[in-house]
Length: 261
Image 1: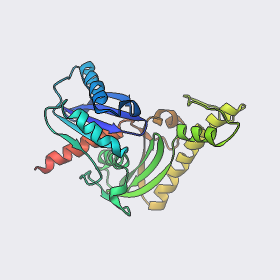
Image 2: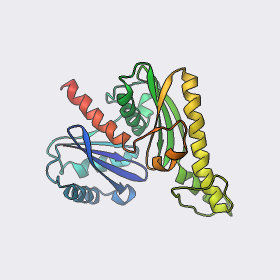
Image 3: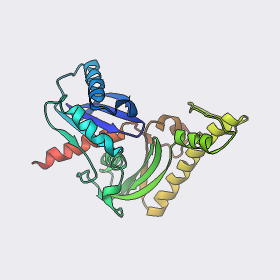
Image 4: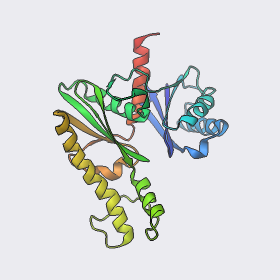
């Protein structure tokens, strides 16, 4: 069994893989589990709830919060029988990285892109376009040859709403909802409309512009915590998988194992 741990700015996502399949998933607040003992206890309780306490062989950790990587490694080392591995941009993910400094690409971006491309890799002449809607919203392209061509980083939905509240004197605090009007008739609904429909319109346009820019077919994917909110509003309809980063971690471990010592 493999325990995959994706540490994000807001949430830490846990995934249990058995035989290459994601069997269980869970989520913790990253800031609330900054202490190794607290994180270890929470993960141990999660494994117990899944009925696999003491049965996990390997843990794989990826983090966009650099200071939390060591915390997670310390917390998990006593919960698995085998190694606890830190996955970073230097790992073989099955992609070539066309980036000014490949080591500075967010590992979450690379893992999601690698997982999506692995699913499309058998389709000749088709790459992938991955939008990850989390605290930040990223859009990244992998061409048909398996080259990560870079992408975009912008505020995520909730971060954008918080920025509007913090940077103005009149705009209120607004929490995301599952749906919102296209044209708001209150300040609150106008903000929701901008976050949801504005972001969806932007993704719809990017899902056309980026393939045209690269001159290739790219299958669009949508992942991250806000994927389910955006998916019904985006065209062309993307393939939605909120667990792409976790699946990328499993892929990294699989590729490491197949490469031998």
